[in-house]
Image (cartoon, rainbow, N blue to C red):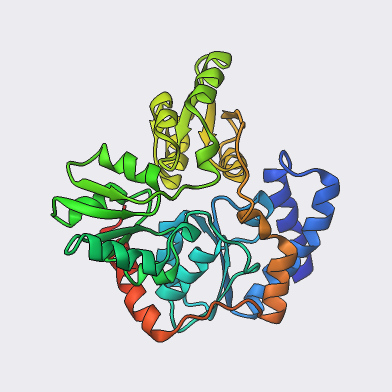
Length: 329
């Protein structure tokens, strides 16, 4: 069987899994791009890491590793590939570079930013440390390398509480998501000094909306991300990290569920759990949607949009990410 025949079969198998989310006419455009990408990444010894919020044709079609921020950071450090294509947003690509400083890391679109990451700078953190001398800084991984360089330890939504309590202190500076900070403060006795950052996807949900969906869908399970406002989390049946939400659906197999998060994540989880009915009044991340197959292929072919960080920043920022991965989930 030729390589082309193998790619064709693989393409058909992929589409069978995600055909519910992509029209046939659209798939005819995606399929040849997927085949080219999957061939070229092998030729160039490249690995594609994709976040859960990527669209199904990326998440199920070309990603070698598809996961949350913590898992992507760990995999970036473990890979033997010479090149890393990060299908996510800018801070994720920077984090991959921090974890694999000797590898080439690429982001298919350098404008794929993050509202949380842009809400705070390294200078802001330095000023906070002056205001609260001696108080350790815990930064959400959704931050720039400059912020991580001023940070004692990073965290994700999966291990935020565990990270805070690992420091064995009575208070921490927790940056930059104010809603995740509120969520953590209710799970620990450690005093949380927070910032006013928010995620443009999760801040749009409201508790009223969740209650209305519940009343319209008896028996539905509502699963919220900790980046959501407190009234949303209170109205939900379960609140957990990206990986925690995936695990909840996989293990509990509710008849009907709503994931209070980004739209593509619901599609990707549904593809892996065909017996679960998903209600999707979700919100799109405009930054994640800047990544598409054409840009991934261009990135592989021309090796453009490389993430470049100076050695001083890498050395300082890497420590905070390494500490996070050592804590685990």
